[in-house]
Length: 496
Image 1 (tube, rainbow, N blue to C red):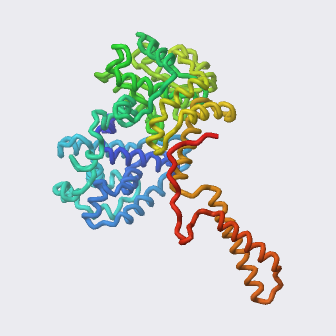
Image 2 (cartoon, rainbow, N blue to C red):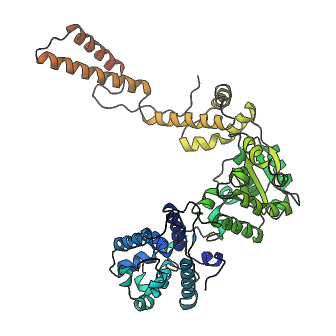
Image 3 (cartoon, rainbow, N blue to C red):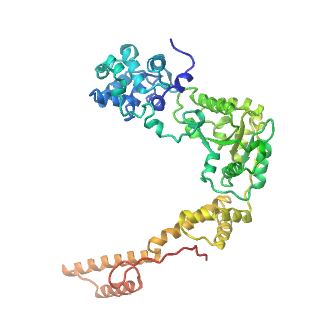
C-alpha cells in the first residue's frame, strides 16, 4: 500500500540513504526522466563506498561496475524529455515503505539503512525493477542476506554506533531539520568563532526592541552591500552569550538558515517547501526559544526565490504575523524594494532596521576592535595610524564599495602582504634578479652566435657585461659565498 505522506519515511532513513535519494533525484533531473525510480537510488548508492550496499556487493564478490552498467541500461529505457520536476515513482515509494517495515519490525532499528533498502528490493526484484532485472543482483542470496546481514555489511558507515554516528559533534540537533539546514550563531559565539563588532549599538538596540514585541516581532536589516548586516546579527549573538540582553532574550538561540543546504537536492516538487516546513515546525516545538536569521532573504521570500519562493512566503506569513517565528532578515535596498514592498502582506510583518554606511570615525573604531584578531592571524603588529589610514584612504579612493567592508579588506590585504614579505624576497630584488637572468641569456646567445662565425656587436656584449656587474653588486640576494640571504623579520605595518 502506497502512503500519501513521504515525510515519515524520509525522517527514518539513514543519512547515507537520504543522500542517495537526493542524488537519485538529481540524476533523474539530469536525464530528464519523469519519475524517480529504484534504479536512480541504487545507482547513486554505488557512489558511496562506505555504504551497506557497497560492502554487501564486495562481500558477495559482485563487481560494482557491472551493477552500475545494468542500472544505467535500465535508466536508458525510461521515458525522457521531462522539462519540469520529476516525482517519486509508485514503485520507489512502495519499496521505501517495505524497507521501513523490515528495518522497524524485523531488525528493530530506528533508521532504514541502504542495505535494508537493497534487501527489500531483492525480495521482489522483478516487481520493483523498472526495466530488466539486474542479473548481478540476482546472484545475491535473499535468505543469506537476511540471516547474515550484519556480517556482510561489516565496516559500513551505517552500522549502529559506527563511523556515521561518530562524525557528528554530539549536538542535540544532529539528524534534525535544524541540524541539517541551520547554523547556530550562539554556539559559534561561545566557541570564540565570531569577531567582535563595534559601532553598531543603536542598530542592535533597535533589533532587540523589535524582537521583544509580542506580534510582528521580525526586524529586517536593510542596507547597501558591505555595510555589515550580518555582522550586526553576529553582534547580537555575542551579546546573548555575554548576557548583555534583556532577561526575556537571555536564553534564546540564534540560528542562521543555510539556504544553500535547504535548496541542495530539492529537485523534487514540494521537497523545498517540506524542508522549510520541517525547520519551522522544529523551531515552534523547541523548548528553548529560537530566533531565526535569514540572510539574503529575497532569495527565499517573494519572487526572488529560486525554488518556489511564493510558497515559501506563504508558509512564513502566518507564523511571522502571530509572533510564533521570530525572524531577523537581511537584504539590500534594491532587493527590498523589488520583492518585499510589492508584497504588502509580507512587508508589514517585517520592521525595517536601516543600516547606513558608518562614518570614517566609526570605521576606525571597528578596525580597532578587529586589530587583535588580524594580528594573531597574520603574525604582524598593526600600528594605530595604519588603522586610521586604512579607513581614511579606503573611504577616499575605493568609491565603489562601502565602509567598513572596504577598510577591513584593505587592512587584511596589507597585513597579508607584510606577512608574505617576511619570508620572501622584496619585489624590487625579484625584478632585479629577473633582469640579471634576461641579460645573461642575451649574452649567452650573442657569444654563441660569435662562436658560429656570425657578426656580433662588441659594444653590446660589453654593455651587457657592465650592466650585469652593476646589477650583481646592487642585488643583496646572495652574499660573497653564493648562499641565499635570509630577509630580516619585520613585525610592523609601515605607513607612507
